[in-house]
Image 1 (cartoon, rainbow, N blue to C red):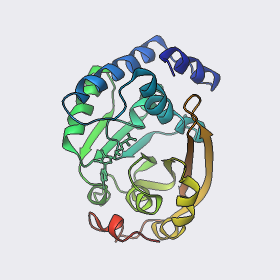
Image 2 (image 1 turned 180 degrees about the vertical axis):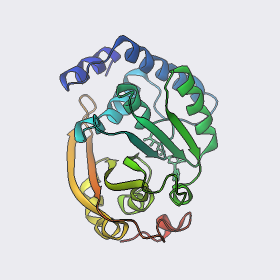
Image 3 (image 1 turned 180 degrees about the horizontal axis):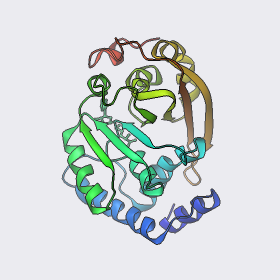
Length: 238
Ligand code: SAM
């Protein structure tokens, strides 16, 4: 997907990029590829592929969920900024918090936010299992979101504790999305969630399958969750 195709696909989906936003994506691409020479940020460096598999793919969250009324978003395990930085570029009103356990990637993101002139983006270096127990972050977000971090049963324990009651957890998944949803039923109930729906799509050129699973927070998360770092993935709630 060329950057021109990117803009016109988004326009068809009702997202009209301004010149400033197009420039921000362009600079994001250049910084990603440049920094990737010094640290491992992404396996994808071809411009058309980055536009489709990182930028467009991140923005598919906007098709599954209405972000107009969302005030704050936490992105768990954002790596090189996906999906929250593309979402922030399109919706500058959002307050975004990024949590990632890899310090080097946070350094990249801090420079990126400065260069792209993104306001109200905060970076927390740490594990979701720990950050979710800090009162300033526990049950404080309208939306928590994650792409390519862990299987759904594990991810639910990492992400849902951040969401306030009535808020939403969005999990961006590949072809195993529905299977993972089945597996995560118990985790969903135990952490205080209820399944809302799943949105499916295929990437326009590359044609791979995607699922965006939405979970609503209906009850407070019991204090014992998430369990200590590493336990959610070693002993998933299945
Ligand atoms: N979400 C990005 C994307 O879609 O390109 C990055 C995906 S990368 C495969 C997974 C990221 O999650 C890594 O940057 C890793 O450091 C982070 N991560 C994994 N487990 C985590 C945890 N328990 N707490 C915080 N970050 C975590």
